[in-house]
Length: 216
Image (tube, rainbow, N blue to C red; front, side, top):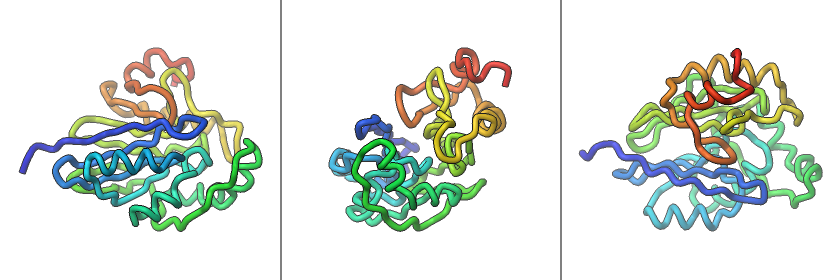
């Protein structure tokens, strides 16, 4: 068996440039897709180019820009949809979200599995630990991969130089600070961070320079 190698493709999709992420085992070709917010044809092109089979569609949270392409990609791949139960109400109210920002209402789909604290999502030889990181939304999660190197899929909890907004449905500034302190800042400084929008960073970089993290 070859050494564990990760295929990791990031596609900014939709008008809010949500970072849809494809993570796959380079040997088994099993993959997950995180936050398929839009432009499913682009995601499909990545899957075809690498000859990948999608096992799970994982949602870091249920804001419309992160879930807009979920139903179509589930239809095309047959993959199971994973979401934290505390964000199901947001997903069930896509019309409310669409009305706020003036976009068409996406077609919803079934959520197959409800993510819980301590869950491990496994595909191929890869595994991601589910961290419950509420604050941006009540059901926000982050995914931590220890191998083949330390990576955090942070959703909209942590950005390069900033953190997720907390003024939308169910958001809480105090809660997101607690999530950052208890979960994300507990990770090693060399952990690479892949946010839901914008460029990647590291835990060490954010610990040192992110103004929202000072004093946590």
